[in-house]
Length: 127
Image (cartoon, rainbow, N blue to C red):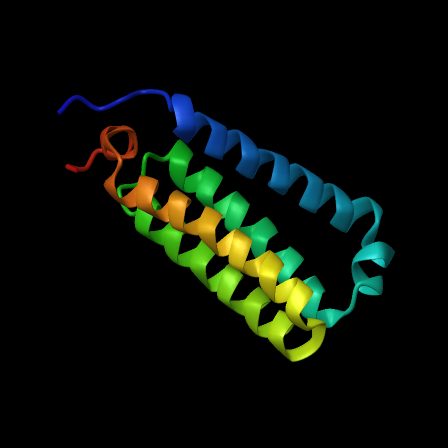
């Protein structure tokens, strides 16, 4: 299987979305930290985690690191699990429903990253 030199299709969309999360997250940390503190420590942790996750995903993608799909998937699952626990503990059923929807999106991301041919080719591994 040939190695892809650039991400395309859904993988490119994932990379662009991660870049947007990283830019907005870092921008918020630099220029609006007071707003981050205002949402409370539980949600502040979630925002910081997904910002760091995005930067790690982008760095690993730039390096074509073969471990990227599993590391990115594990990080996303941890983020959703943390947010789910926070929702159950403090937010009630509306946030739980919201997080279940996000779990569906995470399942799609993880499934594609772990079994898709484009990620397999881009990150130099076999499907």
